[in-house]
Image 1 (cartoon, rainbow, N blue to C red):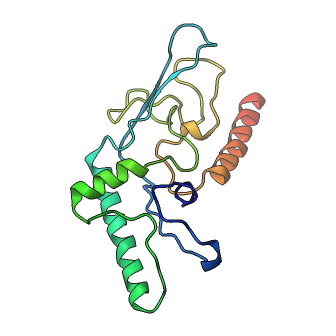
Image 2 (cartoon, rainbow, N blue to C red):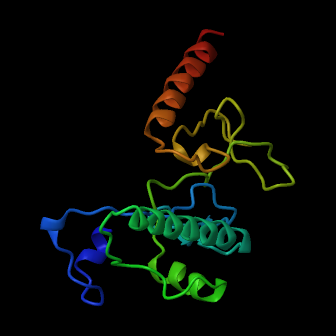
Length: 178
């Protein structure tokens, strides 16, 4: 909501009135992007192609979420809450909702999954690291960050990354003892 408060296209938000926001977010997208090397030079920034909403399934989920948000707001308004629309779609048809989604889309939380854990020859997409976080085909190299999650988590990733780091430390200690 913060990005819309300062947006001159939308009515002025009166802080004295208080407020509530219904935000529809896609926690488990089907769309997949890519990270590729720009050149053999390791100091060159990689090329990111996020492919946001490249799967029609993602639009379906977001349309349902927007319709639910609008329905909840309507019920609350009917129950006596003085809600004023600030940023809402013009209509509830699929085409209008898709345009609304595209206009307001943004990324939430942190990126993950670019070095996913899995089998090297996984038909769903090649894995980069094995279950011990070792990079396939490269000796003595592990990756231990949010990039190894095989699927985007439907939560903030800080605690799972810390848990994974602790497990990775145990794996390294065990490997060094043998």
